[in-house]
Image (tube, rainbow, N blue to C red; front, side, top):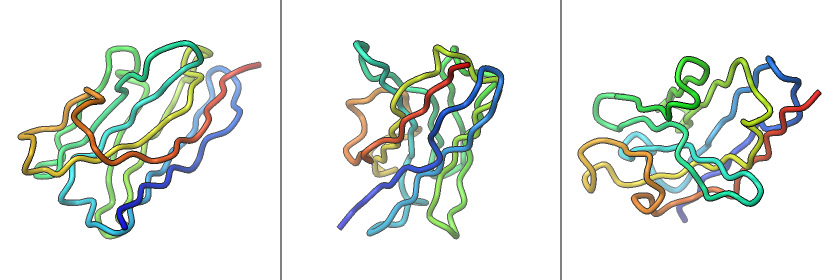
Length: 127
């Protein structure tokens, strides 16, 4: 059974940091493009960052460039999202998602492209 489980969310003050983890089970995440997405109350789910399977190429939304870093540890079947200089507007539920690498040449930040999703982890940035 394919499963993605996010962890690492929580409450942090503006300017703080968090590291989210996305642990995959039931499949080898190294063969999949992995994306991080977020959804704030009353807003649509949006792409934050993704990492491609073959060459580890990364992509970031403009809102998080220079502050967030995505990485993967294939030995642990886990993808991470390091979030620094957090802002109140980063508050959202963060989801990771996966898509088979042979379906897309590179990862994209488009939600319809992904067919495996985790349950999400809440990130709240507030003083």
